[in-house]
Image (cartoon, rainbow, N blue to C red; front, side, top):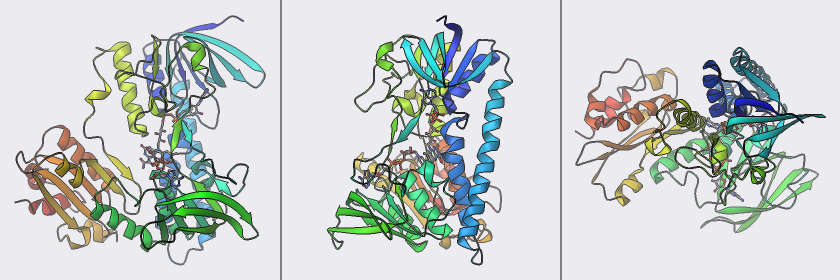
Amino acid sequence: MDALHVDLLVIGFGKGGKTIAAAMGRRGQRVVMVEQSDQMYGGTCINIGCVPTKALVHDAESRRPGDAPKHWYARAVTRRADLTALLRGKNFDMLDVIDSVTVVTGRATFAGPREVEVRAGTDLLRIRAETVVIDTGSEPVIPKIPGVLDNPRVTTSTTLIATEDLPARLVVIGGGYVGIELAGMYAQFGSQVTVLESAERVFVREDEDVADAAREILERQGVTFLTGVRATSIRDTDDGATVSYEGGGPGEAGEGAVTGDLILLAVGRRPVTAGLGLEVAGIRTTDRGAVEVDEHLRTSVPGVYAVGDVNGGPQFTYISLDDSRIVLDQLVGSGERSTADRGAVPYTVFLSPPLARVGLTEREARKAGHDVLVASKAVASLAAMPRARIVEQTDGLMKFVVDATSGLVLGAALLCVDSQELINTVALAMRHGVSAAELRDAIYTHPSSTEGFNEVLAALA
Ligand SMILES: Cc1cc2nc3c(=O)[nH]c(=O)nc-3n(C[C@H](O)[C@H](O)[C@H](O)COP(=O)(O)OP(=O)(O)OC[C@H]3O[C@@H](n4cnc5c(N)ncnc54)[C@H](O)[C@@H]3O)c2cc1C
Ligand SMILES: NC(=O)c1ccc[n+]([C@@H]2O[C@H](COP(=O)([O-])OP(=O)(O)OC[C@H]3O[C@@H](n4cnc5c(N)ncnc54)[C@H](O)[C@@H]3O)[C@@H](O)[C@H]2O)c1
């Protein structure tokens, strides 16, 4: 079979891959983007990840006491589907409008170092490229628990958020990002939610005061947490699916069972490398199954790069985007940009209100030997941040960890309204050496959430 020969081949329509494809296509390079599903143009984020879940969080938060839960939820699922369809179309068009870029819908497997076969139904296409970018993302880990496989009551985030019937009872296995966000969201839609988490507490990376505040908000919204427990089996009953568990911290049952109408598996996501034929191409993987890359995202085969979740880095859309900057710098820039350049990378868990974090926690800062100053205030106690009262969301706290010697911000935990926006200002300040005093004394618009910094950081004076 003759192979189609192009300049750049991208496998997977994720954030990093599509950004590289568009940039190189605009430079006149012949580019092929291979995506296995026409329902995944644009990748995980817009179709089954960030965007649909945050749309659902928004709708869950907007439910008023008189709104019938099942109806409200079904309406939200329809809106989610409309929104993702719109964005999927826009993402396809983004590449389709570029003359030298072709989107091929089919599953790619390596046939050589920079050559793939693409299977679409009975059609088979062979593509050879000067440069290959692997951006195949990640997929949910399915824990080896009896009763999990082929059980219609067992869901992943992908299938749960497409379910049109609101589960009366939802059991979530895993209290990480996916588990927590969906637990909070479904509780606000009206489900009775139980989270089973194997760590001794939820938000285990966070300082205890922050973790306790976040947990307390979720509990008030109706989420029950069982921590330090491990699910051992799932058994179908007349009444639903019963998850048995072992473990449990002080004061908690050593073993027990909880029944749900649906069970959500949320114990992590692993890189999609199986079945890609990486061994045929000589592309090495790590012991965790990710494509092995160096700090410039080069794989073990010259001319082949890996971006996004598949390279084993932090699993965030904005990291996949930053990966694309590193690869583009290799292809058309100075080749100096690397993963080592990243500093103060923030993250947000979309609770209501969101928990946004950057830098060191207080515990980490003290352990690292810093002379630490802490400024922390409950949002409800802030006089100079009326925005929280305007939007009727006064839950949470703002906490800054500051180096007493340099006056620089070491980290922040913002559990408050708009924190997904605020944290980017703090991260920028940290990256550019803006001091805590400068953040405290800056002029912010009013009424805004940022002006909370004036009052919270005043405690450092
Ligand atoms: C429920 C959920 C919520 C999330 N929320 C957030 C959030 O709020 N903020 C955030 O930053 N991150 C969030 N994430 C993580 C984020 O979605 C991912 O980190 C990001 O989308 C990864 O992008 P990527 O570039 O690695 O590839 P992806 O976007 O995963 O794209 C990979 C693509 O490759 C395709 N593919 C795979 N194998 C092949 C093959 N052999 N041939 C052809 N195509 C193939 C897949 O179909 C897929 O479209 C969330 C994830 C989930 C699951
Ligand atoms: N807002 C965001 O940015 C966002 C939202 C969703 C997902 N994501 C990304 O997706 C990734 C995957 O999310 P995730 O929540 O699936 O993984 P995760 O790694 O964040 O959390 C998995 C959790 O499951 C627990 N766990 C593991 N095995 C268990 C078991 N057998 N029983 C009970 N608990 C168990 C772990 O202790 C952990 O707390 C995240 O790491 C994140 O990068 C980001």
